Length: 371
Image 1 (cartoon, rainbow, N blue to C red):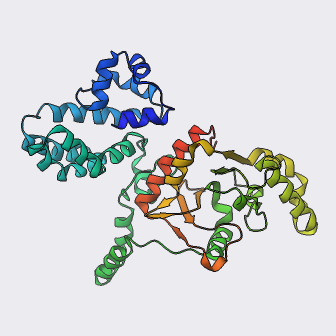
Image 2 (tube, one colour):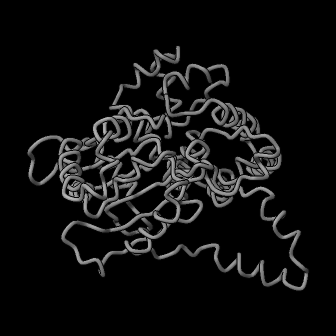
Image 3 (cartoon, rainbow, N blue to C red):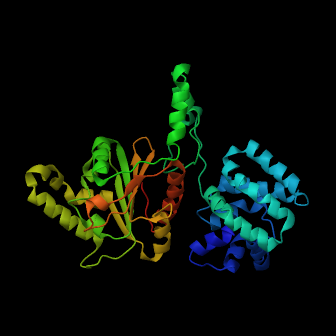
């Protein structure tokens, strides 16, 4: 199912073409997509060459896991035991294999069609896709100890390693229960962020931000140069701002990048005393550090990216810091709306990792790179 979904995202390429790339008969590949045939690990390199978003190492891990589980398919209890051993041997597969716990009773009694429906209901396909498209981190022991939040390159969900433990070593046991309770209470709480609070956060961290990625429904939000802060582009450490909008502008004159440049130059000219230094290399900075793309044909995917829980939001901002860590914000702001009515929040750890995977795919599909 994951291969079929990935194939659909490649523009509806036929299963026959995929089969040819993999060196398989078309009928055999269709059986693989249907789950009635197993892909051998020897096909791993061809798979990652054919499906560009699938990562080599997690693919090999999945193919080996499938072979091990398939060897015990006559006994559900043995398959369950193998899944537990796989989790112990490879903890990075834990979130994926955990999804199978509620599947085993169905495997025991139901027909294949019912098992397939249960797999979809449990979100196994979604978790498998996330696992296969997430590049594994290859860090030194020192880097692992310092790994606190997801990075753009390594959006690894649920792994804070031993940094928390190192912090707690300096805490007196008298306070330990209080500290642990505080962490427990904060686990599923994300902060409400108003536009003013976000602006203050930006100002405090301006010198520590390397990249900004924005995914928005309507381009008017990024055309409002009096509200949207483009002075990041002139920070010495700042490298690039990447903006992707789903809809075409309501009033089409010229391209969005040209409109931004025109409006921003007019703003700077009107306040020349304040922005004199920025005007000196205006064209060079705009051309080198600002990238904007219309992704009208990917509107469904952008809608999913802008979904926070069950709420459809309008804008997602990712701030990539000099440390490599990512700080996300999502909001429902729109031009002309009352500021008091804006809902904005940062995202929890797992949701941040999930959004990062989808945004990396989106940037790849629209032909944008951060570097």
